[in-house]
Image (cartoon, rainbow, N blue to C red):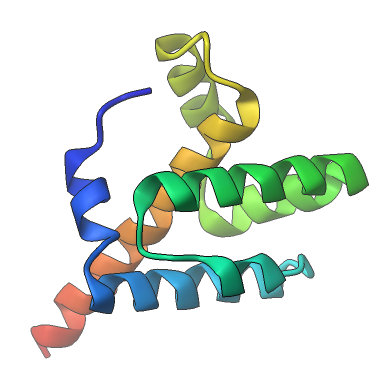
Length: 119
């Protein structure tokens, strides 16, 4: 997988981690997907990646429509998935999607915090 030093560091910062969890929970809840797994989440990138990967596998097994809805809600395109899949052909689909989710949710949080502090 691509090295993501900024994400790995950012996700461990308490304020960003809590905001990340809230954003992720909001998006999961708005799509009608259980966010109970987040209770176990700790501010460590690999742990979050694995936890989210497992949840994506569960979603796919239960209903693929919810994953499509969730990806749309989080703002992850099919093109992004294909691009990262080509760069990392040995990685499983659910891990690629989990990484993109983490990246996009952190982007949302950082952007919100930036504009909030500039008001």
